[in-house]
Amino acid sequence: MVRRTACAPAAPGRENPDPLPEAVRFAKWHGLGNDYLLLERDDVGSPLDPPLVRRLCDYHFGIGSDGVIEVVAAAGETADVLIWNPDGSTAELSGNGTRIAARWLARRAGASEVRITVGPREVLARMREGLAVETEMGRIEVAPREPLEVDGTALEFTPVSVGNPHAVIALEPERAELLRLGPLVEHHPRFPDRTNVQLVRVDSRREATVGVWERGAGETLSSGTSACAVAAAAIANGWCESPVTIHLAGGDLLVEIDQEMNARLTGPAQEICRGEVADELLDDVSRGDGR
Image 1 (cartoon, rainbow, N blue to C red):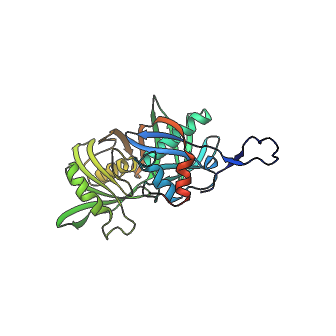
Image 2 (image 1 turned 90 degrees about the vertical axis):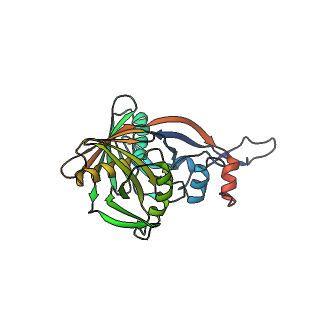
Image 3 (image 1 turned 45 degrees about the vertical axis):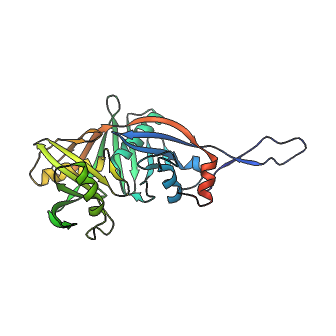
């Protein structure tokens, strides 16, 4: 990783002061307990890389988070972002991460409506009352249900794409089962690029309770794209009708699905703190100690 440098005050008798690294600033946010670090590429001085992301996301040797939002560029009411998983891989989309980026940008631009580009998808976001952000997540693709055998357990899942892959499984979302099945389904040969996993209990025509196992992150308290995937699968399978309130471990998200299977997601995004990454941590990563 390359850092920007600034000049230290010149010592007496010296003409060329030594360069000192400028601080790499970050903000920590969460969406219903799904926490992200937000960094601007301009502050870092170069694109993030997997070793640095892994170290930053480590709760013991770094700052700790479920992922990193790298703001690649921001101008006015638009921003391009890259979503990193804590294992150093990147995600095609993040519902919570996009809401966080949207609130950050809206506050910076003094706007009530912003656009966030994540990969090929542009998300329109509107600021609502309090911490709430309403995002137009785009079209969701739902495929027919498929059988899947995992560790001797016969399952049935609904394949869903929200720009990223999901396996929606109608099964009581007990934590022990989520921790057992989540990594097995994520890494199943059926999913060569791995998948996000949801265990779902349908509570009513407009409510479902969900346990989330995120690809590259593991168990998380909430997931915006998971909420969209579950709502779309529930509607396509005839379990629910729009709008659907998705109950997650960290709180509730509201998903509206129209007749063309376009999703609108509403939920909170909250800033936790701001800080600076210590130079010695950055030096560790530069030396290859990414832990």
